[in-house]
Length: 286
Length: 228
Image (cartoon, chains in turn yellow, blue):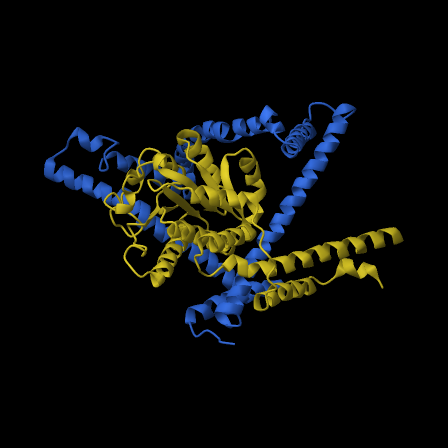
């Protein structure tokens, strides 16, 4: 066998193989077990321990191109909070994320209300959750919420006055927030650490794309981040926790993709091994 | 198989396949999809900024200021920057508009004014925050304390982190030739850097695959209905 051919393999063959290893497990998943890592469990535990007089602040800071990784995290966290009757405040620091946050909030409210049998177990916008929307520029709202959340967001995404909403009863500053969870395709969890945590002492958690995870590990190790969801794997872990601990049903988009993720990783590893075999074989011949 | 009849799904499919067609070779469909994406993104951002920033924060407030001045007369209150409606907003608006002088060569130097203000403001804001939020806590987390040796596992990790940080820093110490002791530590530093790059590459592969999985799920589930 001519191993040198491995080095000049047509890239279209690689693309075709990748398409098959991603596509086939979506149709026929092989359901590997999902092991929950410590960083995901930590975030879940902090959110779960939110007392009734506090709320969770979710910062939706991602654009459509990172939706497959971050949107499932957002859905899972919303389901978790609403299942536990934890009040939720949603904001966005990115212009592009406005519609995605709105879609997540509306979808999860509908999910809960389709199963509700009474007013008490319904999710009512303005009572249990509010989408505060977007204010420019990113650092200013982060700092401003340390003094007054309603001053920064006097009206919500739908232009309704925020201070009169029941969800805001007793929620004025970061002192009334149990944790800020920032889902980001960029650096927003670090902004919250640098500007909100250092000044106001609020706990910060993150949900980030896999490509940026190494940037956040030092903050997790130092304890500045109270938990971290890493890419699609992190999202699937949170989905698993929400489903098993709270028993809330709902589509688990990240878990659906994990079979393809595992198959694709095996394929990439195989390509790396074959490429190296070809390289060393031809090097020896020379 | 249950193919979608939603026209927006078909638009999404056309654009997804147009972008994927680049994997075969550069072509008109790909360029159409790329240009449409750039155009729509910019158009949406522009409209969003106009409706959520420029109009409510500047135009509406200046309009209200003039109305107040017309009905109640001029007062110092209308020049108070802490008031929502004040004439100073016009000044900030003009400074913002100086960004456009870049397109007029004769007065393009004026662009330095808003850039200077912007940079000065953000540097002042960011430098202390970076020290307080990143550099000092990270240095603190690298220092070995009694708590680091609470168990064998934590002690091993803490020592490994300390060695990794010091050796990696020594690799980037260029004021002395890497000979003798420094050669050894910088070599260990390279090993740590390579491990870091390997981890980053692994995560990058995972991220890219996740994006591809998102598109394939859309094609196979939302469009073709092959997955329930």
